[in-house]
Structure formats: structure tokens, C-alpha cells
Image (cartoon, rainbow, N blue to C red; front, side, top):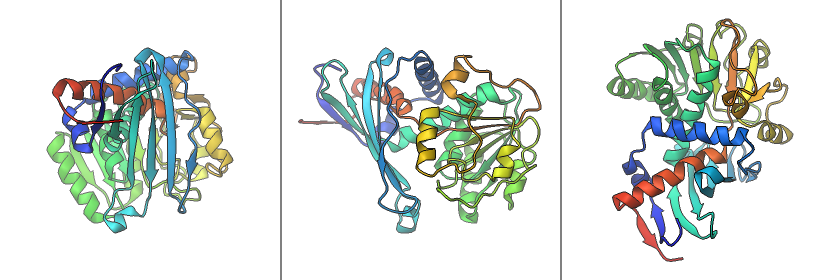
Length: 324
């Protein structure tokens, strides 16, 4: 990065680079292997909370092996759609690790969406039945799409059961997924129907500190894997305590959020994703285990992906040079 001008990449610029899900999966897996080896610097993300259930977080990370250093400044405002605005917004700043000089500023929303899906798929690679064919989706927003795309890159999916509280959102999701994939997609009018027969379940409702849980005890069948990218907001305590294993992507950050009032009564995670990926802790050990991954979203995931987009954008002549 040394000697290059500062480049601004808009959401459209980032999308135009068209980094593949397979590339993102590889970058994310490499980042977790580096974390397992103690080669990632990533303090728990601090944040501010201007509104109830809304936050703006600072997410710094340094991954020496990927020559990647930077920070994401990201906001999540669940009520934004009422004003015609996205829930997630923010920027990533990349720095040259050799000089500290900023070299790129880019929209973070595309990267956030796809790296989150990739982390789900990476957890599923180790914690789900590799023959999983049926996926349940609860909440058909951005994460309902990118998590499914990432899972489809690793699993022989043949059917998707999708639920959303908005019928309009659900119908658009079904139409879009049918165009993108050739597997069967079934809209359901009850969240239970999206769970009980599924091998893998993804929940991505708005994050809430004191949620009203949807998923109840005995909904998750024996042998199923679930990914909660909503801080467990969909899951009742009775359902969680029935599970054989609860994992997360980073235990210190899980404990940090617990200190802020999240995860009241939740079981303690048995392992972090880097420990699982590196086989320091076991993944699935029994075909009948019910397992959930409550991934929080880590700065290193964004900082692992952003430099690859930056370099490809430079090669493609994409972006706006800016003076410092």
C-alpha cells in the first residue's frame, strides 16, 4: 500500500469489484487461523448507543500475515427502514501497516453483509452435518440472503424454508432467491415451519438487548445446526439450554457484551470459532447434537476482506483519489 494515494470506494465501487463468495470464505478462514495462532490484534469493539437498540461501533484490527490494518465505524439502527434508510451503514478505513498512513476509505455495508455470511458458513463447515440439504431462514433481509449464498457454496442445499414478519419482504425474497439458485424455496407463514424440518437454520432479526424470543424448545431437530447472527435475539432460553453446544466467534467479545446486558441467562460458549477451525476444540462430535453458533461479527473479518477489494479496485481503475 506504501506510496499509493488515498482512494474512496463507494458501495457501488465495492460491488463492482465483485469479490466472489469463495474468495471471501478463504480470506475469512485464513483470518480465523491467524487468530488461533495468536497473530491478530483485535480489541473488543467499543461503541456508543444514541438510541435504544441502536449502536455505532468502532472495530479495529491488525492481521500481520494479510498485511491488513484498519477500522470499521458502523452503525445499526433497526428503526431506519421506517424512514426509508438502511439498518446498517458505515465506513472502513484501511491503513498502510508500514507507515500508518490511510490508504483507503470505503463503504462497509457490502463487506459486512458478505463476511457475516461467510462466518456462518465457516462455522457450519465444522458444526453442521456436511450432508445438510434443508435450510431455514428467519428474517429475509440482507443477512437472509448472504448467509444462504455462503451456505450454498459449501452444502448440497435442495430446499429453503423462509419466514419473515413482512409478507412483502418474504415474497420479494422468494422471487429473488428463485432467480439466483435452482433449489426449491418455500415461503412459510409460521416461524416454526422454517425450523422444525431444517438441517441448518439462520436467524437474523434486529438485535435487541431484551428480545421477545421466537424459537422455542423442541423446534430444532436432533442433529441440526443454527447460526444466530442476531445475538440470540430469536432464541428462548429453553431452546438454548436444550443444545449440546453453543459457540461464538470470539469469547472475550461475548463476555464484553454480556457485561453490557446482552445474553442474560445464556449458556457459556464452549469454544470460539478460531479454536474450532484450528481443531483446538472439537466441532461436531455426534450426529444427533443440536448446535448453535452465536457469531457477533468481528473487526478482523472486515479487515481481512477490505484489502483484497482495495487492491482489485486499484487494478481495475475503480475509486476516487482523495488528498489527505
